[in-house]
Image 1 (cartoon, helix red, strand yellow):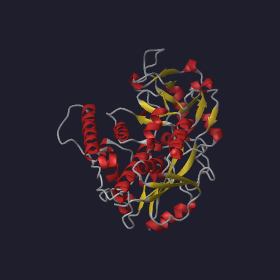
Image 2 (cartoon, helix red, strand yellow):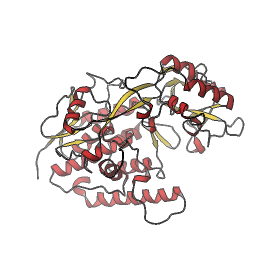
Image 3 (tube, helix red, strand yellow):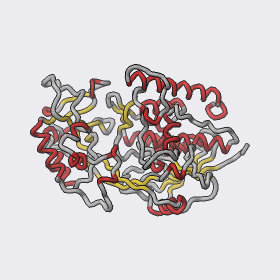
Image 4 (cartoon, helix red, strand yellow):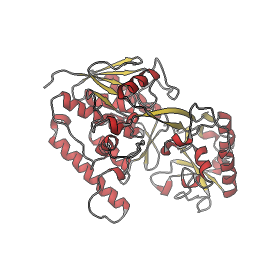
Length: 441
């Protein structure tokens, strides 16, 4: 058994932070390197680690939803990411949303207080010797991105992501809006801004032809579907938005007792409830056009935008050809990757990949057998998706029940089926923890 080991973790986003934590809690010394606060990417603003750039929502917390299962697995295994999120939760109906700054500050404080983690603020251009976990994210600096490209020997794949605008609550015309959560799940945490048919059609027409900001190399076809800018959706068809972020289903207007033609939802962005983001309104319009077009939404006619949406580059690996089920580089196993650059999409998924890398790397360095998370678990299903050579054109993937092993028998009702899949997974996690006290004491 190796008595003393050190792992260099590059990047302190959700994946790198979680990986460092999982290694450290198992007695592995960690050197956590991040260029913050000396150097920032165009999308990052905070000095804290694990900054949430695109949205403060970590999506559903229900076990009938795949991301809810993923969170439950991570909580059961002692995730720093989920512990920090739960401590900084803000109301969001059936979803888990957080106070961004409070969440990131909690992660940073816990990592900084850990005696076996050395935090170094510098930009990495070359990979060091020894065990390395690359979790520099989809916004990796040019220096480290070049090193990764040379190391992997293949052209990286690129897509573009977008962050949504934020408005002040006091500037929203609440006489033209109502508070509710879809299908009345949880508490009424969303501000819902309805539009009638005429208002919606005018809005979509202007949105489809609004001026976009100059983004070098931008191509609608390179946008990941889960982060599609609203103006791209508007160009795809007049009703596309009504079946996407502006869908009115499950949002009965208490003023009329009926559905509206379309509804824009605003979600709380800070614990005080003074700031709200436009749900699903990722965009790369110019700031002036965002103000003009989004102010066409009746409840937002005088909205104060404290942050406009912006586009930023995202890069991910051709992981099925490069990585194994432990996220290790097949050609050089001392190097692992974690986070969105591997092709897992979303904050929770990124942290989950970091968790798996941390656990499995610790097991290997301690001379213990691997855990080998199976495809029956959400954590394992993600790892096998990104490492499988059988997929076609590889694209980033959120966790979903489609990549988790089916039950093998029929269950009536989709929610019931998903709940049984979740129960099976959590039973496996609990049994694994009991059998592997060497890693989960």
